[in-house]
Length: 307
Image 1 (tube, helix red, strand yellow):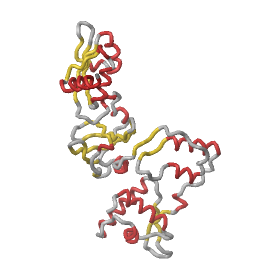
Image 2 (cartoon, one colour):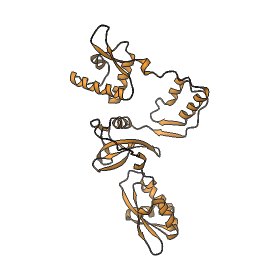
Image 3 (tube, helix red, strand yellow):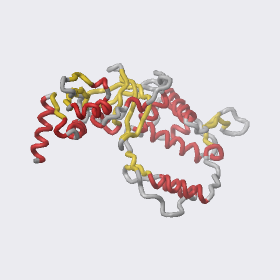
Image 4 (cartoon, helix red, strand yellow):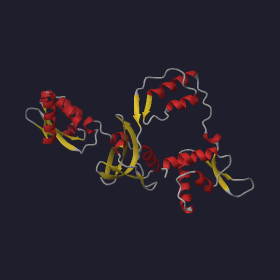
C-alpha cells in the first residue's frame, strides 16, 4: 500500500488533472492507498485535504454539475501554478549559480536543475558544487510530524524513542532531528539517517514548541560530542602551560581538579571517540587521558599501530 507521502502526491496529481470537481468516492477510486470502508476513507480524505490546505495547496469545494447540490473537489491550476516570474538576466544567472552550487545526494532522481529549465535560468556553466545535502528516507515523515506538532516513535540505536519534533537541522553533512525525548525528559538530537524505522506519527497538536527555542543550542559544538556512540565521561589532564587554552575551549565548568603545579583535569562527555582522540593528541606531551581505561587503551593501541 502506498505510504502517506505517495498518496498525497497522487491526490494532488488527480485533483490537478480533472476537468471538473470530483466527489470523494471518485477520488478514492482513482488514488491508491485509501481504506475500503466508507467512514474510514472519508476520515482519511479529510485529513489529507487539511494537510494540503495547511501547506498552501488550494483545494476548492465546488458543485460537481451546474444546478446540482452534490459537491466535489479539485485544484484549479490558475490558483496553484506559479505565475511568470519575469526574471532579469542577472537574476537568472544568480539563481543558476545558487542551485548548481548545492546538490542533493540520493538515487539520481530529479534535482533543482529541472526547475531551472522551467524558469529559463539554465544559461551559463553554473557553479562548482560547494555542498552536498544527503537525502534521508525518514525526512518527509519528520517534516510532516513537525508541521503538525505530532510526536513520533522510531527505532534508534538499540531502543525505541518517542520524541516531540521541534526542528530539523543540517550540520556537518548530516540531518539532525531536534526535539523533546519523552522517556529521558530532555532535549535530544538524533541523526536522521540513523533512524532505524519509518517514524510512527502520533496525534496532531499534541505538544507546543517552546517560545524562543533555538535548535542550534541542542547540537553540541565540540567535535567529540558529534556522534552516536554511547556517552562516556573522559578525563583529560593538561599541563599548566596549556591549561588556559583548554579552559578557553571547554569552559570552566569542565574542570574537576586543579593541581598544585597549575595543571588541570577536565571531564568531557564523549560520543565520538575518534574526534576525542584527535583533540587529546593535539596537546602532544602536554596532555594525558586518565580515564576511562578503555579509551586510554584505545589511544595507546592507536599510537602503537601508527608507530
